[in-house]
Image 1 (cartoon, rainbow, N blue to C red):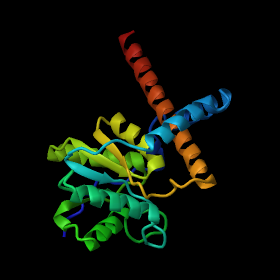
Image 2: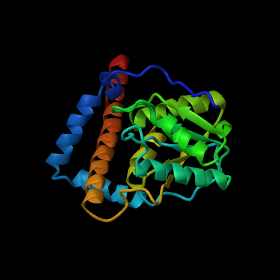
Image 3: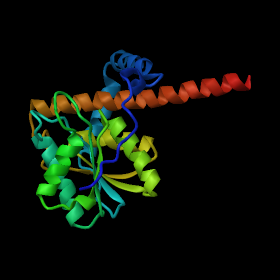
Length: 231
């Protein structure tokens, strides 16, 4: 049985937001409402276009982003992600699958452990499965995995998640200087038509808008800090 990769201890909510997290959220809300929602609509277009993903290519690993368990069981969304990752592995795109996700909600096991068990039941050997089982959200998923990749000398990832999550996950990964190709789980909800899909798409659009606002704010405060040191 594969030994899980344990990331550093969980950060507090304040640490997760970072020093400019609350400020960037405020700026994202201000820009979103002040510009009549146009920034969010711009990001919505990116979310919908990015849902189709990229063609997979040979990589060092396949990363499956976790999804909150329900009554300790996998949701259809998480199963779809795992099934897609299994298919990529069987096609030889990467020699290993990294399953990410800590213990969230009221679950008694981590998302990564539940995902590993699903893959083992489908015949994927334990030696081909790695776990990142401490993260609570996408940024932590990717940050912890980046540390592991660097320690192993790996560079490239096939990033697997559901279609509407793909654009934000890809932007976050590239913001951490990860070399990723984004490939969606084609059968993963909520890719069906209807109100739920549009509600999820709008949420993803706002979160993507917040991410880019935070990146811009971070660059700004770093620039101001450097300027103060010079002067």
